[in-house]
Length: 272
Length: 303
Image (cartoon, rainbow over all chains, first blue to last red):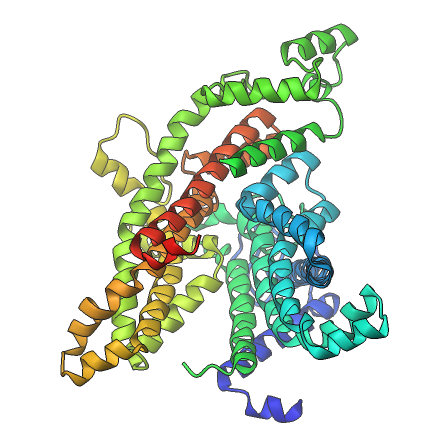
């Protein structure tokens, strides 16, 4: 593992540094933030100074503090959602691959239908029906996103499922759960890990977009997408406050993408 | 067609699952039992679900989308003009993006692994990683605030001429162009490089044909099928990506209407605009399949 890290290209190292910074900020948010998450401390849209490192937002809250707490809320939410979508997608995908036949047909057709529908529109409709709360948000996005995970894990599991050691385990009389957990999962991990990075980026951007539309995390919770929305009016006055959280979003996704590029390169052995 | 039907079913069921009664939600706290009952009659809520579904779908096909819950105006009136605006914006973006992306992709494949190729790859990769609204605000900051070239609000109305309209929507169109071009260019490049590996290209090289000619006449026609596919898929993406961009620029399009209605929980409008978006998306995906079959006869055999 350490050897692998030493051989990593510069781009991957930059990516890892970016992700590490973000994770550390998210974990130590209360220590780093000079003010409370929702406390109003100064004028509206004050420019940056020694007192407020990045100025203040549309209500006079410290932007740096909001940004730090926003890292915590946004990244945690995206991470939980991605993890959930992987649990759903992998379990269903593996079951479909191992069982085959009707189970596979039914699962795959349902997934096809969901995938035919644009994700953002689907999410908007569900949120309009159920209202926007954190749990609804997580479940909606996780379900929609698990369709992509399903496709991949089914395809990967199909390839593994025909190998002799799986056949041997079948003949030993192992059950479905054993086959999935101990025979297929360990061999399917590398592509799934790379996919996790990609899906995380996607979910992260998706949540940011929803928050930006006012349908994600609700105020006064700090959230990067929501912060862009709240401060959007400032840009026409030549104040660049909304660009800061937007840049934070872009920064993290670029970081994750750099790592994913490297991981894909490693697992495929492509030389293009 | 079946997909659209199923989607309409899903949308309808989704709305049926709404917790609480629509009539009570709309009329609010002060409603008496009689007014709620009357309102239900008006919305035909007293009928069985499958009958209402049939009626709703029947009306929908005839262009009657029902009435908005928020202001009681017919939904079709709200949607018609905005849908035109959305199509106009998406088309403008497509007209800029498609030739640009294909050209950049060919150039990048031609000069592959040079500084030019690497720069373009990095720039497009970062455009893909950015959220749409980030690009949008950067463009506003550059073109609207700094040099006052384009307006930051894309307000248009029906009395404006074509050029005025295009001028007004320049920034949203550019935003969409950036996002879509990045995707298309990368895949065009990949498709052409893929073809460049084949034996007949090597043959052409050995014959001493110039590289530009090889790319234009030998490689490009054969990578046309994946490229057309990518273009159609990206147009489908454009239709959906338009939602966020419309909100950023306060553009009176269908996406803006959809988001507003979701916030207001104005269900008939959400249903109708959601279904239109979904139908456009499905249609463009279908186009992608059909067109790539036309461009590549081998795909026709397999069925």
